[in-house]
Image 1 (tube, rainbow, N blue to C red):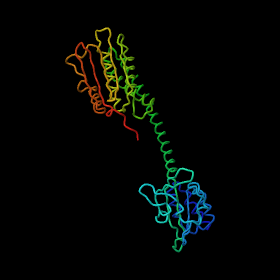
Image 2: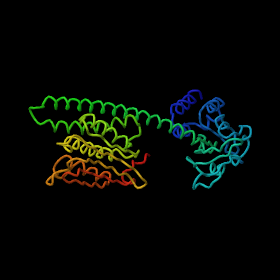
Image 3: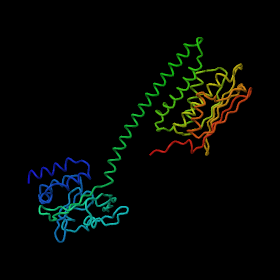
Image 4: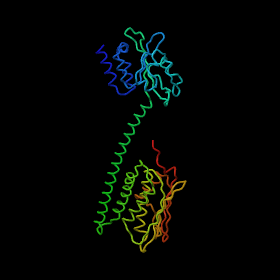
Length: 374
């Protein structure tokens, strides 16, 4: 009996997952002999699964319940011993309409999920397993039922899942931080190169590229600061872009009329919107006031119950009659197309010589809203 008992203990104790723990117990060789052993019952006293055992006599009566069952049900072993399975009171959960005591006798292996009432405590939701243990002659000797609290199992799984999410969030923030730093470095290098080429070649393409990269870098900066998944406050983002562009070009005599509402959008909406705003603000600062002492650039991003209206305007010289924006085949046209496709945005451009330029972007709340989590 000693070596047989050791094999039983090893088989059960090594299995940490509770349902499979039960399977290992029920599949143990010579379990009927073991259940008659006080040593094995002492082992059952220690395992973290609620166990009840009955002897298959006529009538069938409960012979043993371990401390884990007492803790789960609130019933002492003495209340159960010598009684029938109907003393186990519980109602099947969902489509299962059986009473717990009846189900243990009628079913085999996984019986179902039941809610058991507990005096003075909240009811418990449990998964129930049942099996008949035969002796060496094949005669039914014992019935063993195992009850596993689903709530406790779910809590452990949820805590593990939440810990994994926290770890992934930390990794994502670290990646975003590195991307932001790399983009800052790329932007700085491009601006240095642009300054070094002054007088030798056209530096404008370098400036435009640096501005676009800086717009992307600001997205990653806000993602790191706000910690909101792929959600961006469009108002904050456009304010940051306006501040960056005005600082980069620092044209004396030009003021910025800025009115911004908070408006959460998805990353796929924020990115092309920011690139369009960067492009238009840069164009206005460099070209709209040629031959003038100053003027006003307008950036409004105003939200209401229908959605958001973004206006980028200036009171400058306007586009010449033969110039359109965005120009086909250029990167700006690709950015505008992305804005229309990702945010389902309507974009309207108004400009005429001597009357300035006004671009209006409209998107509905439903089309531009961040994707729900989960």
